Image: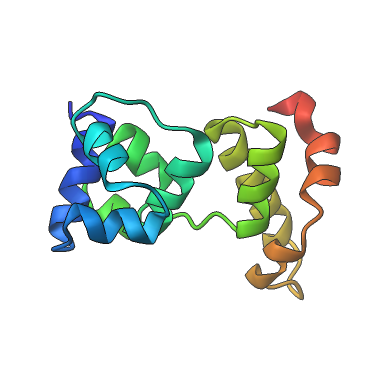
Amino acid sequence: MASLGERIKARRQTLGWKQDNLAQRAGISTGFLSDLENGKRSVRAENLLDIARALGVSLDHLMEGGNEKEQEREIEIPASLARFADQEGITFRQTLMLLKMQQQILAHRSTTQQQGLEQVDWKKFYESVKEFL
């Protein structure tokens, strides 16, 4: 099974990007990216979210791997949720669960569109569901 760094490198190469390209898009240093791809460093939540966004893949794909079809089902973490997760120190899994819970609520409201995810009060929502995470 490929490591996190190997999956990042493989996706970067699929896109035809050099490390400089990804590092700039994700707001990290090239040296940090190199160490990450080579398994010499771990990564913080906010950096991994930025890398996933830059690569256009889901956090699930980066963390656990999967095939190209799974990459097409990319999960986009709203910026407001990413900021909230970073501020509160919420894990990746908890962040994804919060997003999925909110998406399920929105799916049942025919008048609410996905754009509404940026308008969510993530702190209030998290407080109301954290016992289930």
